[in-house]
Length: 592
Image (cartoon, rainbow, N blue to C red; front, top):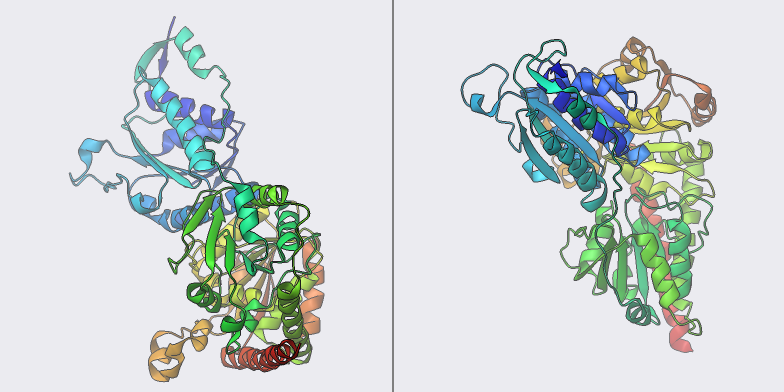
């Protein structure tokens, strides 16, 4: 018996059913005619939770947030033309942070490219510099449905296992698009076979042989340093890296973009104030390691990037995909391995009887404590509203297991400078792949949507403004999110850069005060707005916010110049005392 079908619908059904079988659960869809078949196939499949988001740029960043939190591939659907280009910023971010996205764009038939056909651009490999896989799918072919089924498998395998990150499938469709507009006839038995469930297990496909005993012997007796940048670390990575540190006597620097400063693992060897110590004259010459092991991405702070670049240490990068996360291009060794497994393997391969001198580690810990005491004293004394203290107040107030998204520009740097270690589990998220300020609100809302824990966002006024369209998702999907909006009248980070010496040029072209009333925008999106007036007021509102089931924005008006001077005052005080410590240690050891 033959059945009448629409080839576009069947083609997309085979594709989406396979994605569902392979574990894809979330789909972000923006409306459009050319993508009708994809939209109908995803929305009719009960295995998917779908989100209809008008703004394609916001949709892609919302998907990015979903994928970050769930740690699984999320699909994106959009129509043809410039809508495809709107996805690009989020795809770039996903590429550099290795977040799995399955980007499904609809297109006119290939023959119409360059013909002047309406809403037709050249979509062929449009994201080619920032994509892990591209396939120009071609028009649906009911005689070759195995092809689209295999593409679904390849998309999940590449994006989630073999080369984690975004993949792009460009679907071509001809009218008619709707299910009841028939284009072909097909045997019922063949259709049943197409929709039948088939088992398929995805596995990691690479291995690497490493002589861990040789590496362990290399580390023993050396002055080493562990740098931890952003990465999707496993739950036990903090414990393993501290065991590694204790075994070899290496201090650990956990970047503010990682979550390793927080949690229930030991923290005595974590040097969270490295960005302050390194500003001391002669620090690098006295405390340059012999070996540096960097897990995950490169550090956030420029002063640490310079330290790494100028270090004479043997530099080893370790991350799951063997990425060259080294802007200095001075690292000679890259180990492609899960960092947690690497630490465990090195510890197990190390001879138990070998003892490690603690002098190197003790010095780092002592200097870190000097900086920590000075920081605590300054934060307690500083008047409202110093930007660095905002970060510290937020972290202290957050409930256990909260999600904290930290925006780019100054917020992530103040997180790096001023967040102290804390015996509290926090999940820190950033968009540090390409470090843009677009899509921040949408990404945070995506994280909040699929989390039972409260979610907080620290963001500057320009980044918040860039993605105000994204706030509509909070209304539509009833997503609770607490936003700490730091308003320093636009471009405050430029006060910390050399361009700040050129006041007229900076005032006209770099500082971009918005001069808008954020209260009106927040309330337009049915959010609760509060202008923070003091530290006590901030603490009170942060304590109340987790109980809110809607968008809450706490705006703190700051002075970028005063905050800059306060940071410099802190760093100068640290440099003075660390210099004194180094001289005292040198004198004492020379006299022995």
